[in-house]
Image (cartoon, rainbow, N blue to C red):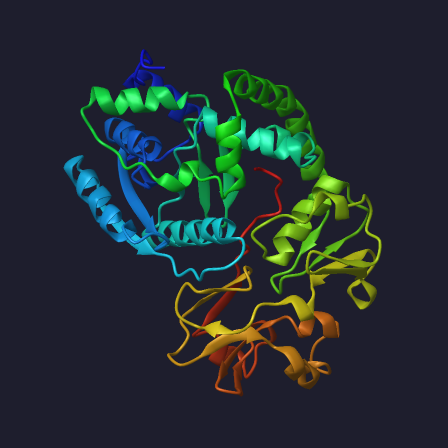
Length: 397
């Protein structure tokens, strides 16, 4: 599609306005891989506002560090300040999925560090078509078939995709018009990944069909969001990381709530979901009668499924659910675990919840359990361990 037209400034401004509001200074974070899509987004943002870029080096290819440095140099030439973050990944199964999780964790942490509420990504119409096709092939419902949302929410940051309606050929035309280069990542077309194989298989007709399906599913997803919001508004969320629902939940609302409580990077499998709140374990979450917590159903993290302890450095997130700030050097953050038995008489929380509470230790010695005000409230004021779920209880894509 060599005759593709570049994206004009007024057109891009309209796309951004549709995903707003933004602050007066229009300071945003943009994730830049160095590929044509993210480089075009960075360029367009320089004409619209004041972007700061983050480059994630996954370290999966020998040349990745050199490419990241090159991208940083190119961004500097555009007047964009950037920072390179390294992801520590070990070889093994599901590498692409683990790289994606690590990338987003680093990007959102950088947004929080800089106090920037908006993270922009260069996903375009081609990416949207592939996403919808993959979800259709996996039996997704209306929420998934509507594709990636232009705006969704993670912790204290918004995930913004302003280019979802733009053909990728136009983004390359935008760069050529500005005489800018980009990096071609060979993994984008690798046959070792599901998306890479699909990218090779889909033709123009397939992409149009997928985008048409996304448009037709959008109204259904919007209606479902309203239903979910009404159901989730009745749920009591506790700072200790559990929830109590007074009544049954539909499949979509249940999925969103379980996803948040689990702290996992992906939602529960659709095949495992069923309306209602039958007693069971789902996606690392226990679902059972609330008992002493009142009428309704308790949803809490499964003690056996929590993550191992981590170093309690500032901004560290444990188990995909709790963030620590202000901890002394040398401490770890992990589950209260077997030490929960010590607190059963001083707390009305069930044993299953107590065992999953975040606890600070020095070696094997228990130092603090902030949610139980242990050892005392004064000691717990110096350290903050707050609920910081990877995913809020909303079904936005």
